[in-house]
Length: 202
Image (cartoon, rainbow, N blue to C red; front, side):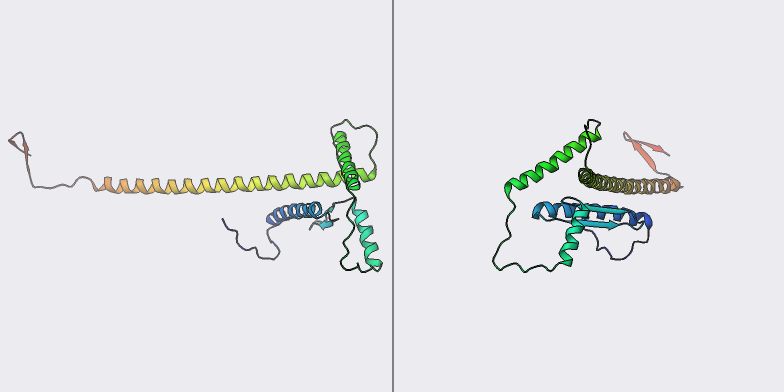
């Protein structure tokens, strides 16, 4: 079924507005994560809800690191890159080390979640784990919302089918009632009934 064009204005219904915010926030964070993975981009995303709650995402490192890089980039004049010169590619060994560090942090965090952690986690490790958990929560909530909407639509479809069946049965009842009320057609004229060549007078 094709969706209608969404009018870009504030949603007045607070419940519908909250549902839309949760769904679109999860989609925005998912797209930012995909863009970071596909294009090796460093992305920092900050969202403040209508109630003032903060949601943030830093795809590499922490949000503080992204902000420091942003401030440094905007305050210092950037030299123009030479024409036809491609940026240096990240060394494969460095990329493997970064991935190993992220995997190790996640495994360490999971062991802490299930009560098997040993020692302590640094602030950077906790922040990375927090971002990953937020992403998982957003994905789970988005999947839950989509499942609930599908179930609601299924119930509405069943309701429509039951209403149509109910109307059909009511129409049949009315039709049968009208035929029954008419009764047999009476007549004063007598007709002979012929059975086996004998005539019986009614």
